[in-house]
Figure: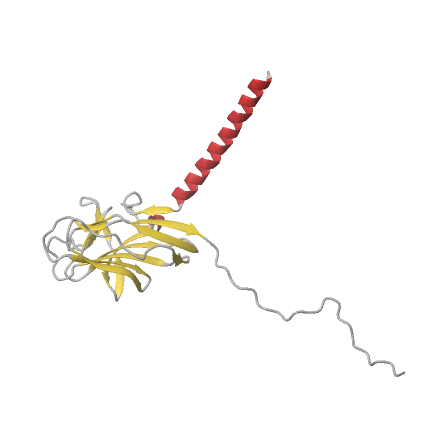
Length: 211
C-alpha cells in the first residue's frame, strides 16, 4: 500500500470514529428529550414520565384510556387529554403531567393555542409541583409560548403540570398543546465544610534563655 492510500485509510477511520461519536451524542440528546405527542401512551400511565389527569389545585387524579376516542378521560367524557390536545370540564381541569427521572435542569418549549376562536378562552398554566411557573388566558388560535420555563432545577420525582382550565365556560375549549421538555442531567453540588487551618510545621514556642 503506497503512502497516499495509507493516508486515505487513516482519514476514513477517523471520519468513522467521529461519525460514531456524533451518533452517540445525538442518541444521548434524544434520550433526554420528552415530547407529549411522540411519547403519548395508549396503554399505561407514566410511560416516559407522562401522566394524564383531571382535577383542581386541591388534587389531581389519573384518567382512564378510551381507545375509540384515543383519549384519556372519564365516564362523563370530560375533561380529556389526547396526544397533543386537552379539553377541560365544568368541574375539573385537563392536566398533562411529567415527572423528572433524576436531578438536573429542564427547558420547556411548545406553543399553547385554541383550536378555534369562539368562547371565553382557557387559562393555561405550567406548574412545578405546587409552584406556578407561568399562566395566561388563551383566547385564539394564534396562541402563546410559555415564558420563564427554562433552566428549571428538578430532582427525581419533581412533577411538571400542563394545566388547561375552562376560565368561565367550556365552549370551544379544545386546546392544542404539545409541550417538549429537554432534560439535562446534573449532580447537586454542595459546599465543603470549612475547617480550621493547621500549620504545616507547628513548633512549640520556648522562653528565651537569660543572658
